[in-house]
Image (cartoon, protein in one colour):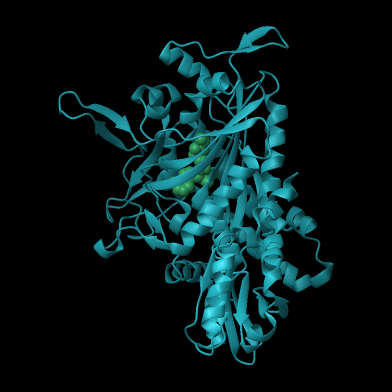
Length: 514
Ligand code: GAP
């Protein structure tokens, strides 16, 4: 079996070769941790965004959207805590001159214990076959118990150091566990320092009068500072939500794993404003609702898990991540946070404006509490791409690479292919494409053999190929080939709209959510 690392490399190469994702500024040797989406990537990304946006704003009467500016008043970031506390603990290796996040180095060390435990479990599962009781093995095997004890010991110490912001102990952990620089292989480390992740720039024409502003590191603050505007103009009553999709920027130090951690990325965030005291009920509601949204895509229920936070930000009273099984392990795709009334209260304090809600049922005013759902578009894109990629052996020396995208989010929904480039078939195929293009992203392709054209469409995940042959001219039927099963059926051209519409429409996905 191919190693997961190799599988991931292959997927990254495929993403480039088939126009999904390109390195930014590639002809200038690239810009680290910044990526561009190509002709197929942008379609997939837009479909993911549409799925989220419509699930939020169309399926919920009490959620509306906004699109706030990236530049905001700099005091907003003081109020939100980002100026003082949006930091990563950094450490440099004096030999390689490379900079690392101290917490990531330690998390990788913790992951090594998990890997050792999983290896023991996999070995035993192979040895004992069907009679293997994994839970019992994990509870009793001395080697597993020893690895688990060491892992927990490190984890507890690490969590405490992070909670206490104890930079000296973070360094001491790195020394005690003999963590080496992956490049130089040495333990010649500097002290750990804090590094703010926000990008700064200047606004204004003269150097004297220029104001220092930040590129927003999250879209959420644009929602908080518009809370009053939306509540009043939309006559919104609590509980209600405000959704937003937009770019965010973070000067990530450890930028790796392709589009998983980028410096410029996109977020889909929703802030749900509730009565104080009801926030944990709504936290649970959104935790379940968001998981259902993910699972409706059909990528495999077993690929998701919750990771409840032990270390809570000082303003949060509950937080969980939805993690997805990437080729490099379970990783956070979405965060759901109960943020109390921290943000609105801070903006009240820093702006001097009253940000309160008068609750007619309770006959009292209060600063609403907030449940936030925050998902990275790019991470969602990566999870879809990785789980849909398959290099398939078709037997008899034949193979194909296929992207099993859920049809409603596939970049191209159908391709119309004349069997040969003559006898009026291209003209008929064009006519069909021109009919379908009002409803579906539809490609026309007449180059190469039909087999090669099917493979090209499989490689970008097109759910349907429509082949036009001589019979089409006689009885107005075409061959409809389905991507995953490769089954072919003969259908009337007039039925294409309905057949495709049923399976590729976003509605079919949205209906699973209600
Ligand atoms: N407003 C809350 C917030 O921003 P976060 O956990 O820092 O929370 C939310 O980010 C989501 O944004 C993450 O779950 C992830 O999907 C995405 N995200 C965060 N940093 C990212 C990065 N550097 N590159 C790509 N996606 C990122």
